Image 1 (cartoon, each protein chain N blue to C red):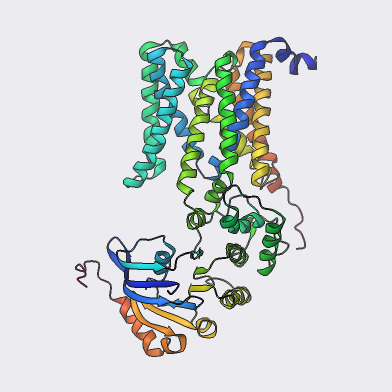
Image 2: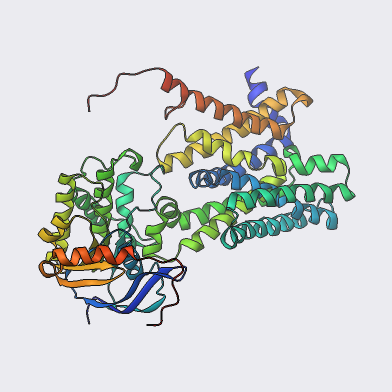
Length: 291
Length: 241
């Protein structure tokens, strides 16, 4: 019985195994990126950039239909363009970066939906917005695995200056010129992971597997290394739980949203019961220490 | 060649000079205090020497091959970042370890020694968010220790810090002086300057006096400095000098 619920679907169906592998790859790379987005107070930037990818991917779709390379390239180009443009607007005008990002992503979302609707049906639009995690073919899986590998390798390379840039950017500037380079590299990783997430979860939910596990992990540890590991674990756990729940519920619960909902449940649970300033911990008074 | 040579230096923001036509030298191995009223350009001068601000006019020449360490007034430090005191201090090893270098046993020893030297032993595994202002300053001094710099710039290092911590950190400054490192510090407490700093630059956008502390910090000079800064005109004409 338990086997039928927890393992059976993956043993029996190829598409469930593929979905699980895809989600694991996404969590492995997306969660650490999400942790740094959160610690740099860029959570909403991640969200905005996820939307910004849409018109690029939609252009690729207009040109070549559901072609992986075309939509990936389009999405990457649009993501980088908006990230750089928002930074430039913030530097050159009075508008702060968050406001200019909000402006860009609203335009992008409207433009993207319009572009897809020009040629596609409502089903295609639904696919673009929410992805289709149960239809990952070899091509997409290979892309997700490559993105995960590139991301983890790059993070390992820039880890030291990236942490320093987050904690004390002034100090990094005083000892090294790598600060700007590190920031750009990091933005590149964000775009890369959002595009990867886009193929599995769609433009609206791609950022969910990045931010929710990271935010949930923050309620359990105050150490950056553990934070990253916990976030990765939470990401994979919500992927697995979401797929199982979606399978058990039949056609009533689409898999992509189920995965993000599972991550949401983990987040709310952590918010309530987390050992680091979780709400229940706060409400239950414990004797303070002697020193 | 002195550690720092300023030639007719003007630094400022938006064309308004905060440091105006300052010339002079800071000798290698000297211990210099920069004092002056608020708005006198002290922090700006330090920023300029650290290379964080380019001159509007004149030049700053630093002796070649010097390793520089700069502690800004309110470090742009994100204290909510989940990192331990140990790792914050370890950042001081950037010059020797860089992006990929291993932090080996020898370096671990140096990190622990630096933490001990500022009296933070036992705090290694504490999050930086849980430190008090004085403890944070001690940790930043430990990081400075590891930087092993020849030229150390401190911007108001003892502001809002209790007497005991100030005394401890001042001892480190004296130690650096003993090791022939060049130290330049912006300070507010005249008594501290008189007690511990042989050289003083009294600044009020322009140099009021510069030299031996005793000769610089006279009542007359201090009064003069106060009057000079109060003359600020937002519609001042361009400077011809």
